[in-house]
Image 1: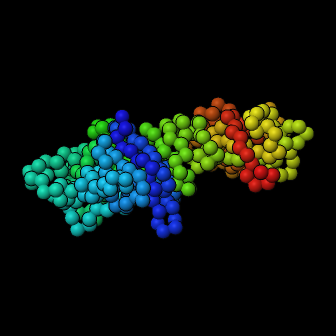
Image 2: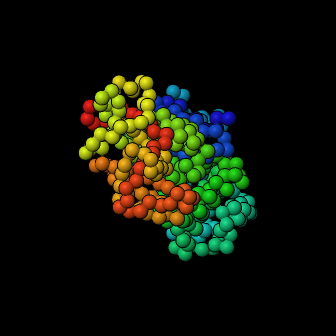
Image 3: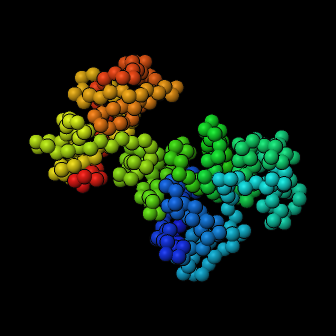
Length: 361
């Protein structure tokens, strides 16, 4: 069921067109992660939803209620949109206690004091912060301040919450913990969450769906994490989401060969028919789609090996190129980890082919 709808949203700042005819739909009770490079218009879209930026054209609906329409001249004020928001810097007021920070949205709506107090207690219990109700933000850790910001957003709405880069300032362990807590909160409440980020890893961990924007502010793919990783619809998506390697292929003697500098290495795999007449191609592969194979004619040298606990991360010298290879600790235990400086054979799984960028393209 469509819950949030952006229909043909256009926004310009002077001569700079940030969004043009941008449309996106969020389903009720899902976490939608909007992912794109910095400056692509993600935050502008959020500001349009919240009523902080007025689009030039288009319409915005939440649960069939029109919040903005350029045609019908509707523009519901920000304070009446009933959307919870958590910003990157948390925006908790340092001079107010946790109770005062969280109760602020309800006090603005002049709700009864007894109702506010009960809601504050309920929300603090949800985010495991009950014992800190009388603390000032300066007495809290970054993760605790984040929980306060989420609790305050829930006081504005437990139906729709927007999270705009909410974990950027946290360390890696705390980021993972907060992602888990956001997911649990969503499951418990059935809240619809619109999560805005350039952090692909966080989006893949959290989102039911990912919406990918390119640097021009265009929506280029919507899908599950598996869709985005395993079935990317363009080179941009394949390159932007996750770690990638690109190896040039050159057509020579009626076959394709790896063009890695010092020599041309025969490429044993067929390329797609629609690209078979290209002189140059780029072969793309993920680090975990490359394996060691002693029988392979594609020879390389291990330049650096890094043990990361759950996997080994290798930097491989293939001709004049440096590529990444990742090996799980289970595979390393079965076939052995590669040593720095050793020669290895490489086998490429699930290669993808694109028109070459640069020479001959």
